[in-house]
Length: 524
Image (cartoon, rainbow, N blue to C red; front, side):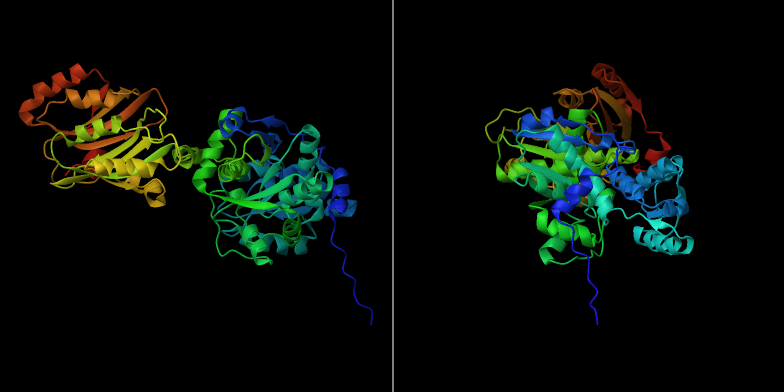
């Protein structure tokens, strides 16, 4: 009985040949490799950005999809291809099919944003919406593949797809022939890092290849540690481009042998990295596209490196516009340029002013001079003896929030550091408020004040001593002017003094006491 011989695994030399002969430039461009000037200066290391966000589909996925499809037979192309994807791979397959003149069926979950569905259709892809998850869509695509005789184009676990993605590394080493210490690569299913690692280890093995995953979607990291593929029961969806529960068999084999190290990053770090990329390029990458930059920053902080050169692959820029609000909110916290606190202050006249004066005179921890700004202030009267205030402050160094909290507590303002509390960052900051039986004679005012030091204290100092602040909401939006919502308890016989106060203050103001939204949610 003759044993069935299994094909030998492809070696880095085999992949090198496949990458050198890959067909990608019928549809893809050679993307730029640009220095991140501001980030490099801040880190004390040279950071190079591989701009895969510049591809026609704003992602590297086009390379592997086209290379796979360009190697199909005429008979296979005549019948068409199929894939399951809710993101960048779908667009890559659709555009590749358009260029090759073949049919492309793209199975996407019913939960896929309409923007991505429209993008696939714009390239001529036939969209089939099925199921609520990628797994549902994948299983349905397998059924359609058999039923209609289509060829499945895998998003990552295919040698031709891997070879196509490897052309990213081929370009990088051609574009930068000087010192290169490490290349940072985001990992979802592992196709990109498999191609990059094979090329780099065949050509310049001294260059480290470092994989990057989200801390809530780390299937490759867990698999390498366990020495077998691990299926995650759940994955975080913020970085949807890398949210893969099970990595490929071939990509796992390659990563296990060729990837030098791994870095796990969290949501806040990725938001901060998106901002870093924007500052240097004026482009907005998607969360997956910023993973490599977040990892470079974390790696430098951990290893205290100076003078080294790192390349980070910006692997995609298909950002949902509605996510930008969340990203901007979390970027400062991710960089630890903002700290969040819950502060308890006495519910007595003048305590709010004393607290603001203390904030304006906070010391510069670590010796560096600093001018801190209040970035957020949420308060609603709720208790006769004490008030709970949600406060955001700018910071200058990581770890500073704990020192600020200790300083405030030392001055008799009990303080809880919420900088790393996800519940506070995602929900509580928007929920400070409600009806209050203590808010008698309350008038609601909406102010526009200049964003400059002392503007808030000017407001407080000009307010008559007999009035009480019963509600306060402010959030820095990065503009020249800030918008503040204030509840003032003004006795009815103080109407004239109230009008004079507003006139003397000189800030644009709208009274909202009669607003039905206020009456429904905040007024007792």
